[in-house]
Length: 318
Image (cartoon, rainbow, N blue to C red; front, side, top):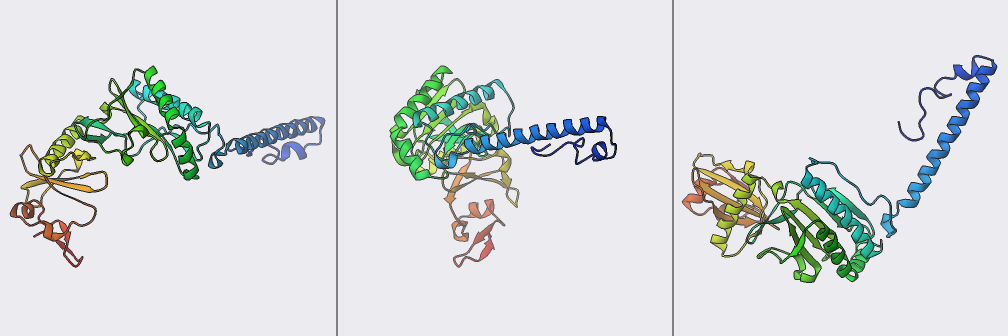
């Protein structure tokens, strides 16, 4: 029942109780019902005023509604409960460091895309989900200024929370991408199977995930794709996101193909069916263009796939 609505036993729903019978019992009933309604309306008004007083995140004032737990994908494992506790305490540490001045703030949520953490040298991959904090939205410019001035306190507060759970700051894993290249604005942490990352580079974000939240099958695939990328490009890819279920078979049945998300592009890989290792083809933000499929092997692997000619007309790989 919503606040402000009355149950079926109210005067409005059952007028015969009050008006049809002219007896002292009827008057007593009506008096009691009117009193109950008055109390209910008073409680609703008080709750509304309290909510309006607390709901001020958009102008930087502190709110009692900042910690929001999204139950999506919750499994309530011990690891999940631990990470949820860590992130909840990290939210308090962030509030303390910024004195509550951080504009619009969504405290705890399950990331839809998953927090990316290291699974090998020079490669991070997204977990199925993670718990994290993000700040931003309304008034971001002012929020950012305050976060930059308080970043030492923020990271110190986060480190203190994590230390309580046996999670320590670690050296930045080699080959990973960090926006801004400002080492004092972010930090990596690890303890047991849990990875965490904090950044004050643009707004504030903090997330933790368990290594087990990437399936063994996806992890194996990502590591093989990262190896293929490095073999051709002679550098680490930094980040790849892919699901083994997305592997497709070519129209002629001779090859397998898969596309993986990079930091800002889509990477394409292929292999002969039955082979263990993959070959990195290309990364793109648009296309693919038909002229890219310029070898017999590529034409076989991608036969019949959509591509665009030099004039932007849609065609297929032949």
